[in-house]
Image (cartoon, rainbow, N blue to C red; front, side):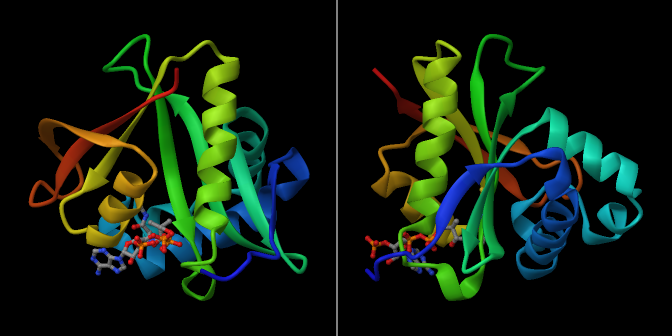
Length: 164
Ligand SMILES: CC(C)(COP(=O)(O)OP(=O)(O)OC[C@H]1O[C@@H](n2cnc3c(N)ncnc32)[C@H](O)[C@@H]1OP(=O)(O)O)[C@@H](O)C(=O)NCCC(=O)NCCS
């Protein structure tokens, strides 16, 4: 594994254009990994992006001044009292560098700060590399699978990492 020259930081409202760019890149690169679509996200206004950048717990991986990765920490209204890792993405050139782990570390720190003892995620049935990555980081499959709303042919597997 290369040593990542990238830094991870919490997104701020002024990161809205960079957040838009990396989300659109992710939706184009790996549409099967996300619940929303490129076309839907293209229609978002700059005001909507600014709201997301301000209110969601996004972390951005910046490499030589360009955002090349993202992850966020959030809640799941169907599973009250649980903390979730969402929006995981690293640009193809930065895969295998450790940037993805740096992003997860920040979400883990966020969840711990919230008092979480576990961090949950959903990974799609077609995302073999992501599943290997999460397993390497200590996430374990819980065995439950739900259909993705947007595409029921994709199963979403719950994985959980114990934080204590
Ligand atoms: C998921 C993602 C963030 C992981 O980051 P990454 O830098 O690729 O992860 P790593 O390289 O550290 O780890 C991936 C592991 O999968 C393995 N792997 C590579 N290709 C694989 C494949 N086709 N099938 C299964 N495992 C694979 C790698 O060997 C590596 O394990 P190792 O370090 O033990 O060798 C990144 O691949 C990505 O952005 N993918 C597209 C978006 C996506 O799928 N997001 C997940 C949404 S839930």
